[in-house]
Length: 56
Image 1 (cartoon, rainbow, N blue to C red):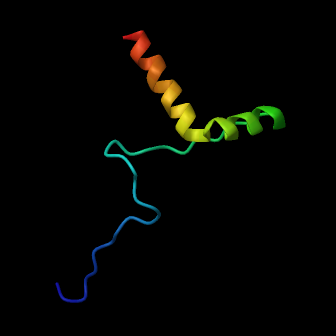
Image 2 (cartoon, one colour):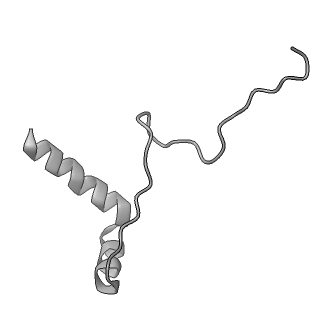
């Protein structure tokens, strides 16, 4: 077993226990600017969680 290295996953570690997925969307410039003002991915995440809670 000497000389064998354990291969670690490449890239940045996941921030959540469930893992994550990077998603790219296309928005026009005005919408992209507004999204940035609102908090970008954190705002989108909050809104999605709210929608999930409503649908329960």
